[in-house]
Length: 374
Ligand code: OSB
Ligand code: MG
Image (cartoon, rainbow, N blue to C red; front, side):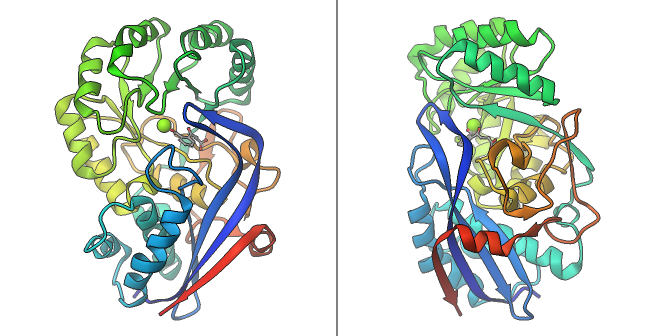
C-alpha cells in the first residue's frame, strides 16, 4: 500500500564539468527540482524533475513544475492510497492537462517507493529483464568541427557504443563530415536538432544521408508530425522523434503517419513510467525500436532511466552516460559508471533505485526547500 504523507521539494544546483549547448540554449549549472516522497511507515523515495529554467525544450520549466506539483499533483498522492504505482498515472490526469514533466516527477518516485516496499529492484518492478544497457553519448554543439571531432574520438576511445551530435543550422553538415572522417566508418553516429529546422530545410537535411547516420533526431517542431513524415519519405536515414512523443496516443499517431522509424523515450518527458511503458509497448507492436534519452539528470534520474531501459524493446544505446561525464561528484553512491566496452549495469540485486542518495550532499546543494504535507 502506497500512502504518501509528505512531499519534499528541493532545488539543487549542480555545476556541469563543461557547458552543454543545444540548438535552443546552453546549460552550465544544472538546476534540478529533486522530489522526495515520505511514506506513512517512514520509507523515503526519490525522484527528479527533468524540466530546466527555460522553456526551450518543452513548455514546462522548473517553476511551472513546482506550481503544478504544489497546487494540483502532490495533493492527489497525499490524499489517496494506491495498491500499486501503476495506478498513479490515471489518478494524476483528472483536472490537470499537460504538465507531463511535473506528473512524472511525482509518478516516478511512487514506483521507487513500491520497489523499496516490496524489496524489488526498480527494473524488476517495471518489468525489465536486461542486465546491461549499451551507452551512447550526446555531444553538445562546439565552436568548430575540429573541436567536435576531438570530442567524438575521445568518446569512441572511452567505449561509447554510439555518439550523438547536437546540430543546428550553420553547425551541421561540416561538423558531421569532420566527425565521420575522424572516427571512421564503423562508429554508430546520430544527430539531434532539437527542432531547429523547418520543412524548407529538407534538401539540406537530405545531405546528411551521405554519412551513414543511425538516425536524425527531432529535426522539426514537436507538433509537426505530418511534416516529419514527409521528410522521412525523402530520407534513407531513420528519423527519431523525442520532443514530439508526449503520450502513447502520440506515439501511435507518429508510427501510423510514418513520422519516425525510431522513438526516444524519456519517462520524465511523457508523464512517468506508466506512460513510458505504454509507449514502449506501442512501438514494440509496430516493430519500432526505442532507446532511453537523457536530460542531463543527476544520479537519481539516471537510476530511473537505467531501470526503464532494461525493458526488452530498448534495443538501441541510451543517453545514459556515467556520472563523471557530467559532474565532479554526483549525489548518489555508488556513482554511475560505464564499462570499457560501453555498458552500464542495471543494479538488479538491490531494492529500489540501486544507489543511495547522499542526503548531506543534496542538503549542501539545496537553494530552496519546500515541504508539502497531507
Ligand atoms: O534532446 O536529448 C535531448 C539534454 C537536454 C535537453 C535535451 C536533450 C539533451 C541531451 C542530453 O541530449 C543527453 C544526456 O543526458 O546526456
Ligand atoms: Mg533529443
